[in-house]
Image 1: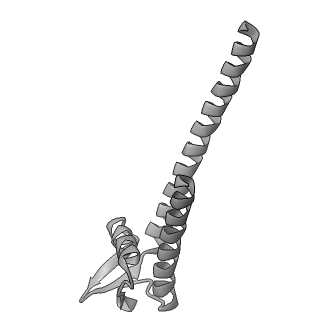
Image 2 (image 1 turned 90 degrees about the horizontal axis):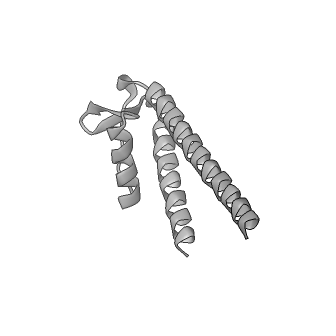
Image 3 (image 1 turned 45 degrees about the vertical axis):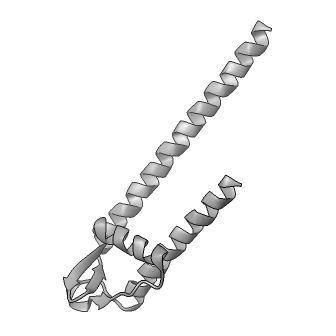
Length: 109
């Protein structure tokens, strides 16, 4: 049950970030001169918007307008990919240790 809830939350977060990025991309807001405003439709979008601003992916231009920094977005995607790979490596190591422990326990008994 908890896994289902976590999956639903992760999907909602991804959807909110995608919606926010699409807003700025469709407006062509890729530099300070093309900055646009954004009004989050709900709390999830507001939190993800704040996160993207905090990470420098969305840059404030003033008067409540923002633009998407493509280089910062690329770096953020690389960071996420690296974190995912690190988690996968840890899971694989733990699984290998569990298999080895099970094999040792079989030999002992």
